[in-house]
Image (cartoon, rainbow, N blue to C red):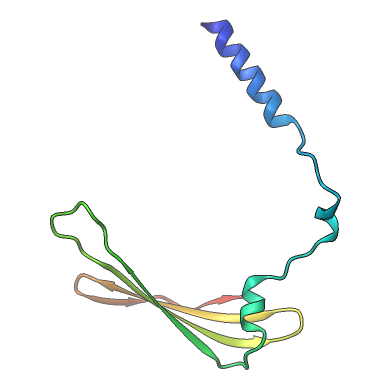
Length: 104
């Protein structure tokens, strides 16, 4: 049993330590950031609101989880966009608005 455990451990370490082969195209190909691509064509001040509704099953009294996320474009440059996000969550007795966060 101990030999089997040692053999499995040694083979696992060997597999993890082997480098992955790199293809030639990995170093040359760059992919655009999807967040930048989505916001780059809009003017600062543009907004988008996303409403998320999650219902958990299996409970005798399921309480739906509701979130409203409002995104606001703060600035656009050729290199980056800055987007502000505010999340409002529905709780049992009211709502909670989280502090704004900036995504660059």
